Length: 317
Image 1 (cartoon, helix red, strand yellow):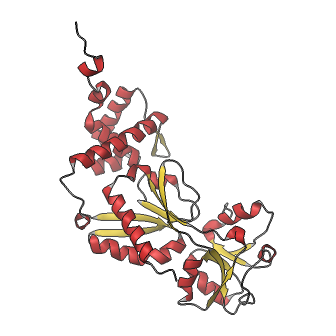
Image 2 (cartoon, rainbow, N blue to C red):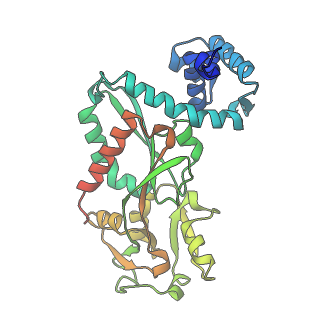
């Protein structure tokens, strides 16, 4: 009589059907959402990736991906499988590659960082220098993030990190607050309001406000904060690049807002004055966000640690 449980006689029956190669192809497809990009990444032909995808669909009895606007969109089954398999593959890679320590000096390619205009001013130069000092073969690419980040950008690896004044990210993202700050009003030192220490809620409607063009017609931190108290803050001009803001302020009677730390940076070079905002608008916490699938990536962890170290070493003023 055979007393061995069936799972011991035939261990991992589903995995034996899938095999590691199919799981790696699936993992890459979930990250790139592209047969072409997966073929390039895995050094395989596009027909080979298509055959492996067809086999996966047959074995799992699920389409796994549907095509929307020439892009693969994962099904619910694919998303569930990815959440379970990616961490397992990452753990296996760490165990199998434990004899090969991570070496930034050997890196090449592009690091992509999504950054709000304010944090880019503060972080871009010192972070680029730090990353390239350790990894001379890297190209560091900052790309704009305005308001909330686009989840698809982090999921598809268009961005390795996103940094900005974000709301609490969803469950599939990890995040860390880099620093707490206070949002302030900034005007030319010749502005009629420049002698004021603080604005009231009533004052907001009397000021001409400058904003970044991407905010136009969108829900923002300001509208979310002010809607509840029925208060108006009229944005009357929008510029396409927030780096223009100090020049615009010096030549007009407009005002804008930014984190205090950024305002101090601008004040090193421009005749600008800070004015405190009403309490409801002051909070401006800078948050770093990355995809759950990159939590255990040695490259992403190095990038996060370097970013954290550079921020911690920057002067507060």
